[in-house]
Image 1: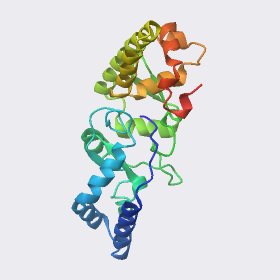
Image 2 (image 1 turned 120 degrees about the vertical axis):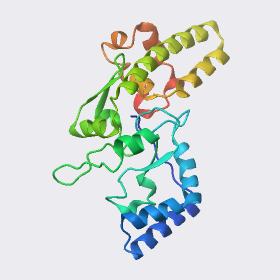
Image 3 (image 1 turned 90 degrees about the horizontal axis):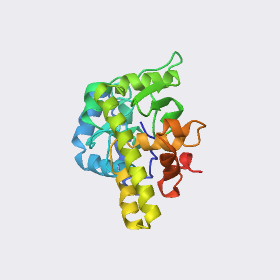
Image 4 (image 1 turned 135 degrees about the vertical axis):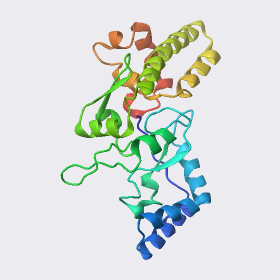
Length: 244
């Protein structure tokens, strides 16, 4: 899971969402009515989907698992629990159909005080709650919220684990190649390689690599000094938390 930064919506779309919410409130909407209104709002859904896509680097991957080209708009707090949040921009994420329909569904665990346990990737950095073992492709929980997030989204299902491990090997190879191209003066090729790093699924692998590059054992974790050196390139520091 990767941190995403929620963009501001155009004024007209903000007003449209507010009006839809107020209509639900006036009608004392339950889950059934909220779902029906949301399903009927095709134009609004299309505009929301477009703005969500603009929040994702490279290909439009699932904002939860990082795999697949995402088409579904997920309500982070499900309509079964919060029907009035059907048109709440802060409650929308792009998700693959597997995460949305097969893993998360209407699950939304809370702690003993009623606070949500799932990590909201637009409100906080998931890596404060989850640790990714790069070579193994496995997420480990750092907090109870991290544990709930791994469980609800199925982040350690085997296909994801295998794909993340492969993404780590691929990213290391591309970083080494990019380093060689820069040393040879081929900046055009190096630029294309940098773009390829952000146009692949499981970009959380690259994010984690950037996060750990200053670790005392970085050369061991990141498969050698060449990769650590390549990660120092400012062109790859697209997230504030990973910069020098």
